[in-house]
Length: 255
Image (cartoon, rainbow, N blue to C red; front, top):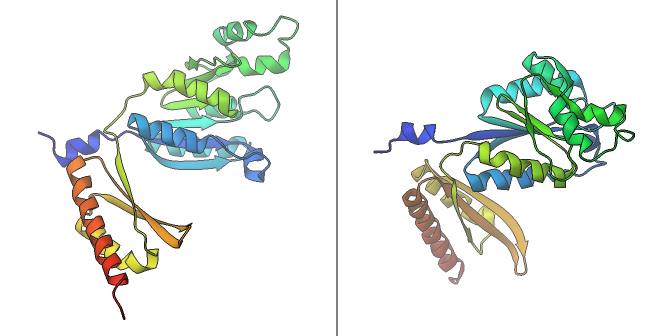
């Protein structure tokens, strides 16, 4: 038997912490949030929060400690490169209260790509790993990410982040997948807002959202219904479709 409490226990949650002044300034457009969100949803992990912080030690530590206490997993992106402002690894070590130093395993990975002459002090910064962390393989450029506690520290470069996420995914516990259905209303959001609110009240254990857009025929609305239980999703979607049909018929009547 599955009751509400056991169903709740099956929910696995996550947060993303995006680190970097370049994101906040707009110089770099983030391409990782949407990718991670979709990836996690598809494997049964619910993304609950995203934060963006600058390359400031205190800001990273505070955000990381807040997020890792609230969610099953935290995924960070950015700030693990070879330059002076890549301070994510140091901030994670500070948040966990552990030391940080060059990790022989990480140094060996870098040697697979760089000669001894090219493995300079700057590049060796990418081998500095907090004590007790496991490495996350990087099939693109070798410099690893790492995992400590429930925190996964990954690169900001999208292709490298994606490779790291693929490496991490088999180690993650997953929950009940969120099911989703979308229906195009063919109506303005304001015309169906009240009726949709009544449906949401009647199906309070289902997530119902309306998303207006401009179509080839003018203003329109997509309605998205989400639930982890197929029967509840079906019941709520049936109510939504009946409401749309009723409003569409009314819109076509002469006044």
